[in-house]
Length: 356
Image 1 (tube, rainbow, N blue to C red):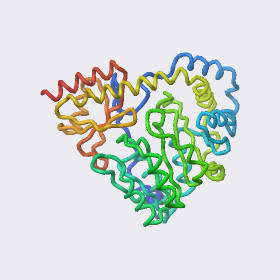
Image 2 (image 1 turned 60 degrees about the vertical axis):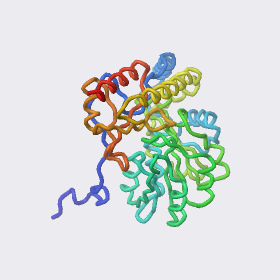
Image 3 (image 1 turned 90 degrees about the vertical axis):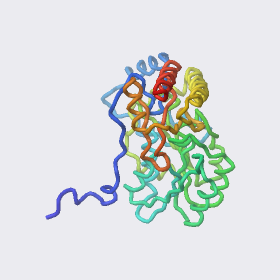
Image 4 (image 1 turned 135 degrees about the horizontal axis):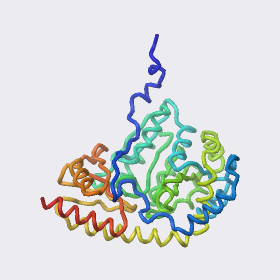
């Protein structure tokens, strides 16, 4: 008789699960979060509305009120919006709707590793396109791979995690016009950098845009993401999404956030300002080289082995991300932008470490 484990798909057993170090530290700059958190006024209003709801009842099957607000915020039609449990669920729903054995997905790498994981679990094939040496997108090569191999899909993260590079509207338009395959653009960090591609949705029915509340909106713990696409695509993507995946508390928080953007916008501006300051400061430290980024993080080349630098900083109460196992990044770590005080501690610690 075969073992129970033999019933697991071979393509699942062949991959490694997405993981994150379980370590903690007073200064946590390893997950690209909003370091300033959610304004108290928004939290209080979310709690007030949540307390008025019947917790014994399921949330709305279709979160119509939130979808209407997302449509207004994004500038796209409501029947072309899907909301769910973080942008990770949006990724999974889109991939599960489209990918099966024999389906080819073009993926510029290094990028968010969850894309490859979900594609391979679904049975698809990844056609990897390396970034250029300066860790920006190789647009001609991406387009060539899509066209020459008649790829069914391509996924482009812009700004890209972990490198922070972006694709321009002209570059994306060129790719969209070259293929009938779906072009999925993950804009998790849009509020922090990169161009808004929603105006392209009307003309290009093969464009799919993914976004999240986890980054600029300071809602990583509540897991709200959304997808923008042609209504006929959204209808199919919804079939692959679990029912009631967005709980009423997260739904309420997202609505309140969208109603109070004036409270969140200054925090986004502070993140951008701190990013610019941190980049300048990091450039002054001998032994490390930060790569320009349009998001709230940098990949940083280090003369000290990444694992050792990770450990040195953790011993000082600072948690960064060791990304040295990713393609092309064996000499790199990723550092998220923190508060001014956290960034000062980081800079001081790096000066100390690299003077040893």
